Image (cartoon, rainbow, N blue to C red; front, side, top):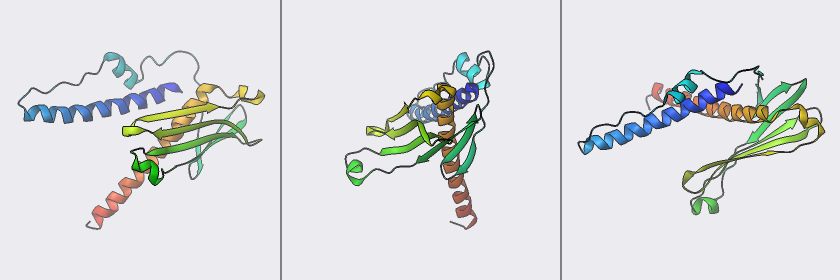
Length: 180
């Protein structure tokens, strides 16, 4: 289960490095300097290809989108749901340069509506990104491994980002077709 997420993270890292390198090389070209090559190690490339993801059995969890920012999955016959909100910062927070919370997700066990974990992703000063994952344990939470919680939280965040990007692409295409 972790290999696919590691591959996505490495793909994102590579995209950021390539974009940064293009910008840097454009500046270097303006000063008649040679362009720098992309420094990407063999370990990074193997992670990108999915080689060496670890041995042993991997558990597969299928998440289903059930509504606005709601994702459900099942482990050992128990249903769980990530439900979230996108929070916007107030004018006071924007005035001092902070961007406020970006997302707040809560993982709930559906049989007894018990809070299992929560995740907050927020932007701080100068756009620095921090995420907080809190676990709320009880005797029934032993069934759900922490790795599943972490991976499903990441999956829910990636799905929301994919939806947001898809909406922008559709709006851009509509604008282009309308002549705008």
